Length: 159
Image (cartoon, rainbow, N blue to C red; front, side):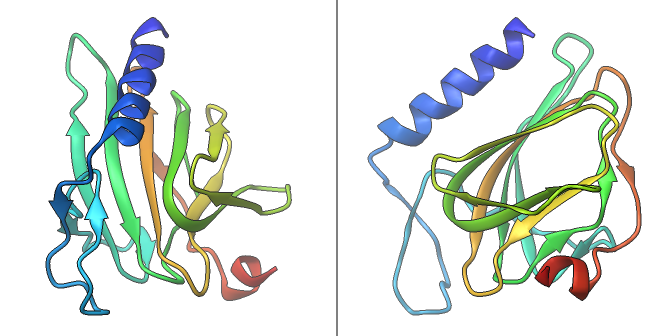
């Protein structure tokens, strides 16, 4: 747990202390945007709806079993329902996003917002319908890998 807290503090220091010297290439608006982390690789699997990119920042290994990644969701993009045996923490860096646990109302996340996903609780997260969303995902892997479930329906997303 101490490791997770240290990673969170480090990421927050990087996020809020950055000079914003990294630039996104190929932004759709034609404007270059300052990013804390590069957008990464486009996610090409069936666990996401819409367009999203992932940059792995910290890979889990035998010593530190926490993975950290930056995910950029285009407007309307989202994960499927899923759960994490070791829990997950979402840190909102930019834009507007949603987080929802099964059986609970959807929560709006904006820059500086945090969601703490309890272990083994089905949830989803992603961008709002009209804004992109950039998040840091801190995922405990010591108890197992992510369990992917069904897609979030349009009705669930728009509720």
